[in-house]
Length: 102
Image (tube, rainbow, N blue to C red; front, side, top):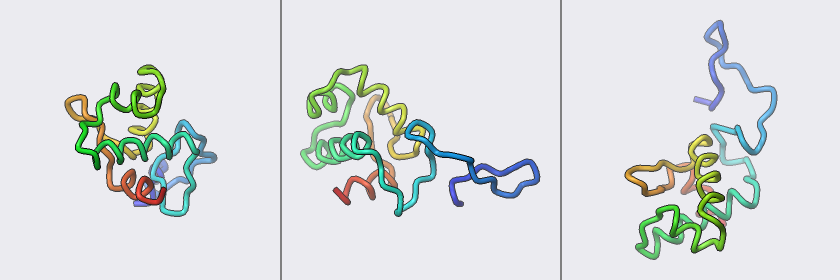
């Protein structure tokens, strides 16, 4: 799968543009915006420190507000870079790949 949605005829249709808010199916060659990469790194570091990555911990780690974290987590979920289960934010394989590059 290439991350594109099938068109009406069943053939993959490439999106006309991908912006910071709606990019999905990011491959290895895509450079993430610095803010996105910083959140992925913070989540990765929390996990490595054996700290449950809930939004309040991410906010503390990054020195940002909870609403800012909530908004970014929503974007990261939409991009397929994190999943949220029982309040815990975890990196997907794609998110881990990007976080490990930093």
